[in-house]
Image (tube, rainbow, N blue to C red; front, top):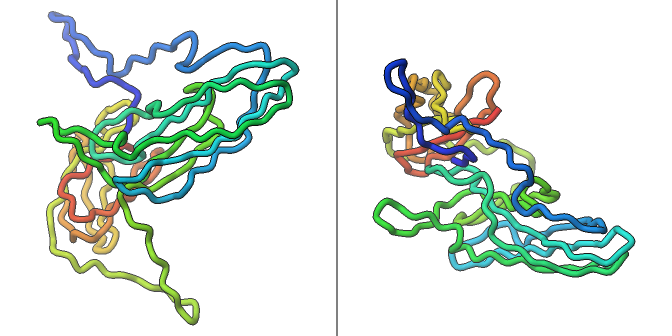
Length: 252
């Protein structure tokens, strides 16, 4: 679950003032990574070396940049990474690599930005570091608000093998794992609990809803999938994979 908001929330009363910056949205004059130049630059392409990575791998993204102006100049190419769906709150984007390069007019260069997978690890309450498998998004640009290329990658998961069949047919896999109780919270981009979200087990069709605190609890098989849906929000679907705690962020 990713967010760009704070978490401190202490609502006040008429008798006692409170403090709250959960919904605060101060707009900076310049975004992180912003810089001025006498020339202009174009990020022509950004290509990752592969789509699936394991814990010992290093992400390598080749970025081609061109000076499209009339004078020489320097630019900083920046690589951000976002954990698309996580069980804990993580930033919407984190700067993981950057490189400053000089280019003459009409010159094009290709650079490689590298990020070891261990930099994507999370830390639990007792200081243990661990990798949470899932989908990550690589964002390449020249500032945090000037992202020109996005690349989706899978981390900690083996690539799915497509079965070879002689003729077109529909293959439906019925979950056969043991039943478990999955619980969690559903929040929006501002970390606010979302009530009355429909939570449905894909295979069994069993449904429940989140309460006013965004909490849900549902029984389903360990190899089933869960869908989270509510009007005006984008429906999210996740594989259970034996997890008993799944938190979700819904966006509009």
